[in-house]
Image (cartoon, rainbow, N blue to C red; front, side, top):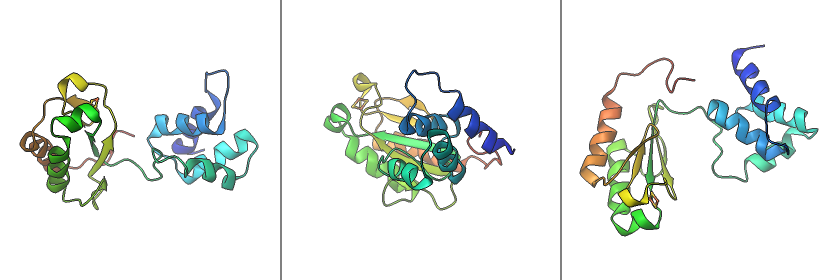
Length: 163
Ligand code: FES
């Protein structure tokens, strides 16, 4: 069994909560490897006694599931109420501009993924962004753009996000 398949199998089979569902199985996979590959749809289907189409129906319903590997870097811009009130929109535009993207998504070279979040849990430091899962508070459009430029300037590694 290859390493990816083994990690998926362990994630699905080692869920500790009392009620295991299709959704909890998908979440376990995404927590383990950051996305839901085809192999995971098959494993979750077999584990839950469903068809792959059933699993796809659940997975595709939730916008937070990814179906492609994570990029090397990840930036999330919070656009929750607290952040929105103190300038999340200009920060968002600045991050997208620095990344060369029109909208949230991955750069074509898969170096950077930009997403939005409805609350990063640090409202007192609004506006907030998350840079490779580290929170950065009281950002300005300029400081946010510099963070993005810094990520894009880093040399690529084969292992990407560490998966
Ligand atoms: S609303 Fe942005 S961190 Fe909570």
